[in-house]
Image 1 (spheres, rainbow, N blue to C red):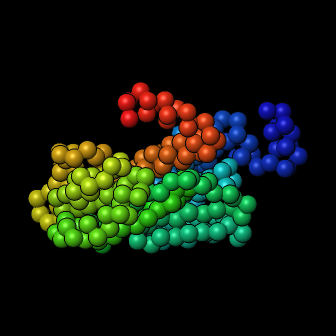
Image 2: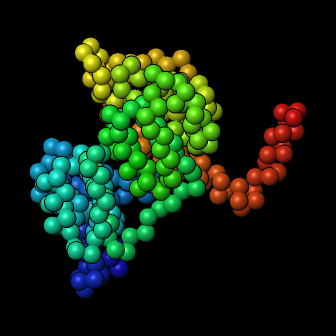
Length: 271
Protein backbone atom coordinates (compact mmCIF):
# COMPACT_ATOMS: atom_id res chain seq x y z
CA UNK A 1 0.00 0.00 0.00
CA UNK A 2 2.81 2.39 0.86
CA UNK A 3 4.41 1.87 -2.53
CA UNK A 4 1.14 2.80 -4.23
CA UNK A 5 0.71 5.94 -2.14
CA UNK A 6 4.28 7.03 -2.74
CA UNK A 7 3.84 6.49 -6.48
CA UNK A 8 0.73 8.72 -6.44
CA UNK A 9 2.57 11.40 -4.44
CA UNK A 10 5.44 11.33 -6.91
CA UNK A 11 3.08 11.67 -9.84
CA UNK A 12 4.03 8.26 -11.22
CA UNK A 13 0.64 6.64 -10.68
CA UNK A 14 -2.80 7.93 -11.62
CA UNK A 15 -5.06 8.27 -8.54
CA UNK A 16 -7.80 6.30 -10.33
CA UNK A 17 -5.39 3.43 -10.88
CA UNK A 18 -4.26 3.59 -7.26
CA UNK A 19 -7.85 3.50 -6.02
CA UNK A 20 -8.62 0.55 -8.28
CA UNK A 21 -5.64 -1.39 -6.95
CA UNK A 22 -6.52 -0.68 -3.33
CA UNK A 23 -10.30 -0.99 -3.37
CA UNK A 24 -10.98 -2.94 -6.57
CA UNK A 25 -12.96 -0.14 -8.19
CA UNK A 26 -12.45 3.39 -9.46
CA UNK A 27 -14.85 6.15 -8.41
CA UNK A 28 -15.87 8.71 -11.02
CA UNK A 29 -18.49 11.41 -11.38
CA UNK A 30 -20.47 8.99 -13.54
CA UNK A 31 -20.35 6.02 -11.16
CA UNK A 32 -17.94 3.35 -9.97
CA UNK A 33 -16.01 1.19 -12.41
CA UNK A 34 -15.39 -2.38 -11.19
CA UNK A 35 -11.73 -2.64 -12.12
CA UNK A 36 -11.23 -5.97 -10.32
CA UNK A 37 -14.09 -7.86 -11.97
CA UNK A 38 -11.92 -9.64 -14.53
CA UNK A 39 -9.50 -10.82 -11.85
CA UNK A 40 -12.28 -11.73 -9.43
CA UNK A 41 -14.82 -13.18 -11.86
CA UNK A 42 -12.98 -13.92 -15.10
CA UNK A 43 -15.28 -11.58 -17.04
CA UNK A 44 -14.24 -8.02 -17.84
CA UNK A 45 -16.45 -5.21 -16.63
CA UNK A 46 -18.47 -3.70 -19.47
CA UNK A 47 -19.95 -0.21 -19.59
CA UNK A 48 -23.58 -0.20 -20.68
CA UNK A 49 -23.72 3.06 -22.62
CA UNK A 50 -27.47 2.92 -23.15
CA UNK A 51 -29.14 5.19 -20.59
CA UNK A 52 -25.92 7.15 -19.98
CA UNK A 53 -25.01 10.48 -21.49
CA UNK A 54 -22.02 10.52 -23.85
CA UNK A 55 -20.04 12.38 -21.20
CA UNK A 56 -20.84 9.75 -18.55
CA UNK A 57 -19.83 6.94 -20.88
CA UNK A 58 -16.58 8.75 -21.68
CA UNK A 59 -15.80 9.31 -18.00
CA UNK A 60 -16.26 5.63 -17.17
CA UNK A 61 -14.32 4.53 -20.25
CA UNK A 62 -11.42 6.74 -19.24
CA UNK A 63 -11.40 5.20 -15.76
CA UNK A 64 -11.52 1.73 -17.31
CA UNK A 65 -8.56 2.32 -19.60
CA UNK A 66 -6.52 3.93 -16.83
CA UNK A 67 -7.19 1.17 -14.31
CA UNK A 68 -7.27 -1.95 -16.53
CA UNK A 69 -5.84 -0.89 -19.87
CA UNK A 70 -9.13 -1.48 -21.70
CA UNK A 71 -12.73 -0.32 -21.87
CA UNK A 72 -15.61 -2.36 -23.31
CA UNK A 73 -18.82 -0.47 -24.09
CA UNK A 74 -22.10 -2.07 -25.11
CA UNK A 75 -25.25 -0.52 -26.59
CA UNK A 76 -23.15 2.48 -27.59
CA UNK A 77 -24.62 5.07 -29.96
CA UNK A 78 -22.41 7.16 -32.25
CA UNK A 79 -22.52 10.03 -29.74
CA UNK A 80 -21.10 7.74 -27.03
CA UNK A 81 -18.33 6.59 -29.35
CA UNK A 82 -17.39 10.13 -30.34
CA UNK A 83 -17.22 11.23 -26.70
CA UNK A 84 -15.01 8.28 -25.71
CA UNK A 85 -12.62 8.82 -28.61
CA UNK A 86 -12.35 12.51 -27.76
CA UNK A 87 -11.75 11.81 -24.06
CA UNK A 88 -9.01 9.21 -24.40
CA UNK A 89 -5.39 9.76 -25.27
CA UNK A 90 -4.67 9.78 -29.00
CA UNK A 91 -2.44 6.73 -28.57
CA UNK A 92 -5.46 4.56 -27.64
CA UNK A 93 -6.81 2.14 -30.23
CA UNK A 94 -10.49 1.57 -30.92
CA UNK A 95 -12.60 -1.25 -32.35
CA UNK A 96 -16.15 -0.22 -33.23
CA UNK A 97 -18.87 -2.64 -34.33
CA UNK A 98 -21.71 -0.53 -35.69
CA UNK A 99 -24.12 -3.45 -36.00
CA UNK A 100 -23.52 -4.76 -32.49
CA UNK A 101 -23.28 -1.20 -31.10
CA UNK A 102 -20.08 -1.98 -29.20
CA UNK A 103 -16.79 -0.18 -28.72
CA UNK A 104 -13.53 -1.52 -27.31
CA UNK A 105 -10.81 0.98 -26.41
CA UNK A 106 -7.29 -0.12 -25.49
CA UNK A 107 -4.24 1.59 -24.06
CA UNK A 108 -1.12 1.24 -26.25
CA UNK A 109 0.58 -1.12 -23.79
CA UNK A 110 -2.47 -3.32 -23.16
CA UNK A 111 -1.81 -7.05 -23.57
CA UNK A 112 -5.03 -8.99 -24.29
CA UNK A 113 -5.67 -12.39 -22.67
CA UNK A 114 -5.64 -15.58 -24.72
CA UNK A 115 -7.51 -18.83 -24.21
CA UNK A 116 -6.85 -22.15 -25.87
CA UNK A 117 -10.53 -22.67 -26.62
CA UNK A 118 -12.94 -22.07 -29.47
CA UNK A 119 -16.49 -20.78 -29.16
CA UNK A 120 -18.90 -21.32 -32.02
CA UNK A 121 -21.24 -18.38 -32.56
CA UNK A 122 -24.30 -19.45 -34.53
CA UNK A 123 -27.17 -17.31 -35.88
CA UNK A 124 -30.49 -18.34 -37.32
CA UNK A 125 -30.61 -15.31 -39.62
CA UNK A 126 -29.06 -11.97 -40.42
CA UNK A 127 -31.49 -10.24 -38.02
CA UNK A 128 -29.74 -11.99 -35.13
CA UNK A 129 -26.42 -10.29 -35.89
CA UNK A 130 -26.72 -7.49 -33.34
CA UNK A 131 -27.12 -9.71 -30.28
CA UNK A 132 -24.61 -12.23 -31.62
CA UNK A 133 -22.10 -9.47 -32.30
CA UNK A 134 -22.33 -8.32 -28.70
CA UNK A 135 -21.55 -11.87 -27.59
CA UNK A 136 -18.57 -11.99 -29.96
CA UNK A 137 -17.07 -8.81 -28.54
CA UNK A 138 -17.04 -10.08 -24.96
CA UNK A 139 -15.75 -13.49 -26.05
CA UNK A 140 -12.85 -11.92 -27.89
CA UNK A 141 -12.20 -9.63 -24.92
CA UNK A 142 -11.89 -12.75 -22.75
CA UNK A 143 -9.38 -14.25 -25.19
CA UNK A 144 -11.45 -16.99 -26.83
CA UNK A 145 -11.26 -17.85 -30.51
CA UNK A 146 -14.66 -17.17 -32.11
CA UNK A 147 -15.88 -19.18 -35.09
CA UNK A 148 -19.04 -17.84 -36.72
CA UNK A 149 -21.69 -19.92 -38.43
CA UNK A 150 -24.31 -17.54 -39.78
CA UNK A 151 -27.78 -17.73 -41.29
CA UNK A 152 -28.47 -21.42 -40.64
CA UNK A 153 -32.06 -21.21 -39.42
CA UNK A 154 -34.27 -24.28 -39.13
CA UNK A 155 -36.40 -23.36 -42.15
CA UNK A 156 -33.80 -25.35 -44.09
CA UNK A 157 -32.05 -27.93 -41.91
CA UNK A 158 -29.51 -28.59 -44.63
CA UNK A 159 -27.86 -25.28 -43.76
CA UNK A 160 -27.16 -26.52 -40.23
CA UNK A 161 -26.02 -29.96 -41.34
CA UNK A 162 -23.57 -28.44 -43.82
CA UNK A 163 -21.69 -26.92 -40.86
CA UNK A 164 -21.97 -29.87 -38.50
CA UNK A 165 -18.23 -30.57 -38.35
CA UNK A 166 -17.54 -26.95 -37.40
CA UNK A 167 -20.21 -27.04 -34.71
CA UNK A 168 -18.85 -30.27 -33.25
CA UNK A 169 -15.29 -28.93 -33.19
CA UNK A 170 -16.22 -25.98 -30.95
CA UNK A 171 -15.70 -26.23 -27.20
CA UNK A 172 -18.94 -24.37 -26.47
CA UNK A 173 -21.67 -22.89 -28.66
CA UNK A 174 -23.73 -19.72 -28.45
CA UNK A 175 -26.78 -20.06 -30.69
CA UNK A 176 -28.83 -16.92 -31.40
CA UNK A 177 -32.33 -17.20 -32.83
CA UNK A 178 -35.54 -15.19 -32.99
CA UNK A 179 -39.06 -16.22 -34.02
CA UNK A 180 -39.82 -19.51 -32.22
CA UNK A 181 -36.19 -19.98 -31.11
CA UNK A 182 -35.86 -23.54 -32.40
CA UNK A 183 -32.28 -23.42 -33.66
CA UNK A 184 -30.48 -23.93 -30.30
CA UNK A 185 -32.64 -27.00 -29.62
CA UNK A 186 -31.80 -28.51 -33.00
CA UNK A 187 -28.08 -27.78 -32.66
CA UNK A 188 -27.96 -29.21 -29.14
CA UNK A 189 -29.37 -32.48 -30.46
CA UNK A 190 -26.43 -32.81 -32.86
CA UNK A 191 -23.40 -31.96 -30.70
CA UNK A 192 -21.87 -33.05 -27.41
CA UNK A 193 -20.70 -29.58 -26.41
CA UNK A 194 -22.52 -27.11 -24.12
CA UNK A 195 -25.08 -24.95 -25.96
CA UNK A 196 -26.14 -21.52 -24.73
CA UNK A 197 -29.33 -20.25 -26.33
CA UNK A 198 -29.57 -16.54 -27.07
CA UNK A 199 -33.18 -15.52 -27.81
CA UNK A 200 -33.48 -12.52 -30.10
CA UNK A 201 -36.37 -10.05 -30.37
CA UNK A 202 -37.18 -10.73 -34.01
CA UNK A 203 -40.49 -12.06 -35.30
CA UNK A 204 -44.09 -11.11 -36.00
CA UNK A 205 -47.05 -10.35 -33.79
CA UNK A 206 -47.69 -12.46 -30.69
CA UNK A 207 -44.39 -13.46 -29.09
CA UNK A 208 -42.42 -11.74 -31.82
CA UNK A 209 -40.54 -9.55 -29.36
CA UNK A 210 -38.40 -12.49 -28.26
CA UNK A 211 -40.80 -14.00 -25.75
CA UNK A 212 -41.65 -16.96 -27.99
CA UNK A 213 -37.95 -17.58 -28.64
CA UNK A 214 -37.15 -17.48 -24.92
CA UNK A 215 -40.09 -19.74 -24.03
CA UNK A 216 -39.06 -22.24 -26.70
CA UNK A 217 -35.51 -22.37 -25.39
CA UNK A 218 -36.67 -22.78 -21.79
CA UNK A 219 -38.87 -25.69 -22.90
CA UNK A 220 -36.17 -27.28 -25.06
CA UNK A 221 -36.29 -31.07 -25.19
CA UNK A 222 -32.52 -31.16 -25.74
CA UNK A 223 -30.21 -29.90 -23.00
CA UNK A 224 -29.40 -26.22 -23.39
CA UNK A 225 -29.00 -23.16 -21.21
CA UNK A 226 -30.75 -19.91 -22.12
CA UNK A 227 -30.09 -16.27 -21.32
CA UNK A 228 -32.50 -13.36 -21.45
CA UNK A 229 -33.80 -11.78 -24.64
CA UNK A 230 -31.07 -9.97 -26.64
CA UNK A 231 -28.60 -10.56 -23.77
CA UNK A 232 -25.58 -11.01 -26.01
CA UNK A 233 -23.16 -9.86 -23.34
CA UNK A 234 -24.42 -12.46 -20.85
CA UNK A 235 -24.34 -15.27 -23.43
CA UNK A 236 -20.81 -14.34 -24.44
CA UNK A 237 -19.63 -14.10 -20.84
CA UNK A 238 -21.12 -17.50 -19.95
CA UNK A 239 -19.51 -19.11 -22.97
CA UNK A 240 -16.26 -17.37 -22.13
CA UNK A 241 -16.25 -18.89 -18.66
CA UNK A 242 -16.70 -22.35 -20.17
CA UNK A 243 -13.93 -21.59 -22.64
CA UNK A 244 -11.64 -20.53 -19.82
CA UNK A 245 -12.28 -23.79 -17.95
CA UNK A 246 -11.50 -25.74 -21.12
CA UNK A 247 -8.33 -23.74 -21.67
CA UNK A 248 -7.20 -24.29 -18.08
CA UNK A 249 -7.80 -28.04 -18.44
CA UNK A 250 -5.76 -28.16 -21.62
CA UNK A 251 -2.93 -26.27 -19.94
CA UNK A 252 -2.99 -28.77 -17.07
CA UNK A 253 -2.85 -31.66 -19.53
CA UNK A 254 0.15 -30.12 -21.24
CA UNK A 255 1.93 -30.13 -17.89
CA UNK A 256 1.72 -33.92 -18.02
CA UNK A 257 -0.23 -34.40 -14.82
CA UNK A 258 -3.33 -36.06 -16.23
CA UNK A 259 -2.12 -39.13 -18.12
CA UNK A 260 -2.16 -41.35 -15.02
CA UNK A 261 -5.52 -39.91 -13.99
CA UNK A 262 -7.02 -40.87 -17.33
CA UNK A 263 -5.65 -44.40 -17.16
CA UNK A 264 -6.99 -44.78 -13.62
CA UNK A 265 -10.42 -43.64 -14.76
CA UNK A 266 -10.27 -46.00 -17.71
CA UNK A 267 -9.40 -48.97 -15.48
CA UNK A 268 -12.13 -48.06 -13.03
CA UNK A 269 -14.75 -47.96 -15.76
CA UNK A 270 -13.64 -51.32 -17.19
CA UNK A 271 -12.71 -49.90 -20.61
